Length: 361
Image (tube, rainbow, N blue to C red; front, side, top):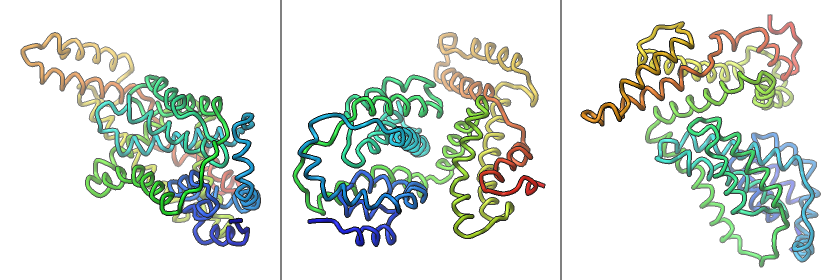
């Protein structure tokens, strides 16, 4: 049955962020992606307004495309590659927040989550990619930055490159009933949101701690790369710019900006608390140098290494892991407390929001 452009636009307007128009067109992977990201943060949903005619045309000639799907290779797409990277990192962040308490998470859980995010984007439209190769690349790159949230970056990069290398057209398949498709989408949606919802409802404090720890560690990595940090700020602020274009709110001190600042302050305060606890473990005071931290670390490791404390193995293992965790916190660079309100940062906000430079005053 041919798909109608008018019906597609109606579903896009009514339930676009939930992917109803993609479900109508048979683009189940795209529909699931929109369900899990609310239409790509709203920006992807707005951008699709101009893409719907091509989506409808593609859906109506799907049978002809499938008949020729075994020949040739789809062209390279920079947009698809970037989307694979972003969605893979997004899936990894959600997994870090909701599942990082599991044993062997960084070996199994994290690469699996990132790889599935990359494969979801790779399967949008008439294309797909090799499941085994993409997941294999994710697992092989998972030891890079093992145990740190930033590990999602090389995992997503490796999986995205592999997915592009093994891209192909989807094979010809018979039509499925709507109930079967909805059942499959429902299971995928629950698999993604279930652990996160359970953590938020049943263990809110721990989930918030994981979220703050993950976000803070991830953002702190960009202190080594100022240009990437500014680019990340710009990307995170794009929803604010879209909002100001829609409602005309140009106040830098608006409630929306204040809510964002509260989130940043929460993450920053959580990182401060972790830093203070790490100093207590090392018996050092604020302002300790890198040499003092490293020297104290070597002393404590020698003292509490399990091989040197076989008479109190359980206590030694606990203290040894505590020392390792504290050292990881203390070796990370810290931004000044007022960096968020600095003129440079606010000027970045002004540029992204389209405000004049003097608004920072």
